[in-house]
Length: 161
Image 1: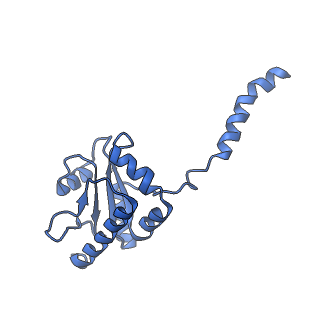
Image 2: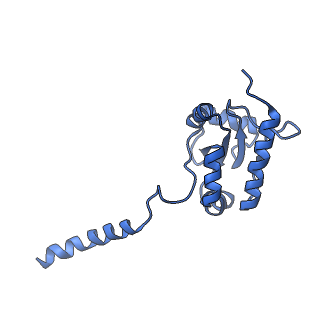
Image 3: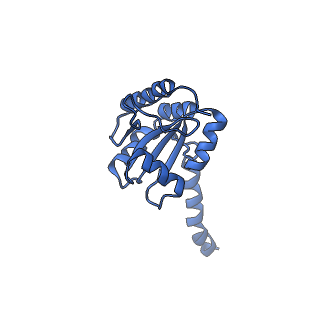
């Protein structure tokens, strides 16, 4: 009998610990989708796309965005409400569509934040360049950046058919 208890004790501890951890669904944060799916959702929902070309937590900028920005409940809620969040994982080879967007943005495979209209046009700044940043942003700077993207979207006008 003691042998059975000793062999099942680690399993019981593991189950107990996992029950105490918040599930992935309960964690604050952004539910990212891939570019192809994101573009489809943008058309269906008539929302712009926030695109994060992401290197993972080994990149200081990307790690800071994950921990300080994307897991902030207020920012995550805003992104969910106003944008379709797309993540392009730069740790893997880009597919054809991701590569084409990278060329349009001129990011040459580097991590960058950018925006697309619901019909997949790159959101441009006042000078016609892609509205994109590689900067490390604070929460307030990130929110201001979202505001700027929405203003630029309005300035670009309705989708071209």
